[in-house]
Length: 280
Image 1: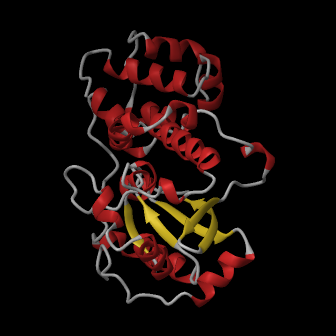
Image 2 (image 1 turned 30 degrees about the vertical axis):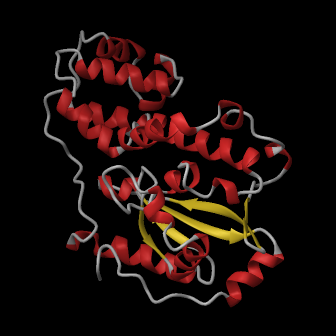
């Protein structure tokens, strides 16, 4: 963390440029003068705590990063990063479980900002079983053992890339989405996952999506033995999050993209409920 006198100034300038805003754009959105923005970015003026929060809201800076801004300017962090089993997270996690359960018989899961699977419903567990009993062990991170991470599932050499029949379209879109999120959210953990997986990727596949603009959504299509599966994802977030953990939660619901996949999940035997994290 940059604690130099101009630490906050650098962070503000980096995030404004990351959003591709001019100083005038930021000034108009935040309701302050362009001159004041200029003074803050050049460290000729020190921000108040309220100004830091105001600028963070205007730039839609993630709460974790707003804490870093506050610290860089000499203030205490404001936003807590509660564990999922914290009693104050009970209502949030209850809502997550309700959304995952209501989406059955189709897969749904809750992810953190590095695309680690935190909670999943039974159809997702059934889908995982179709992909191979040891699939998560094969793609686990170097320190996690059997950590369940969607980027590793798709991009690890032992993952499911060979099963994805439209990889030339799906692979680039997933990689670019993860790269964009890591950049826009300041996600060092996702950047670490990308750095781990990048050496295994082919640039011509990662940067050239085929025919992806011809469809309203691009499903990922799997061939598992004789079974053909086509799914597309819808992502939801908490719009009023005031906690770092909640701010970084993503609910990913998967929908069938064809009648064959819909029929599969309506008749697919569901496994016992996986022990939850956190437990109820």
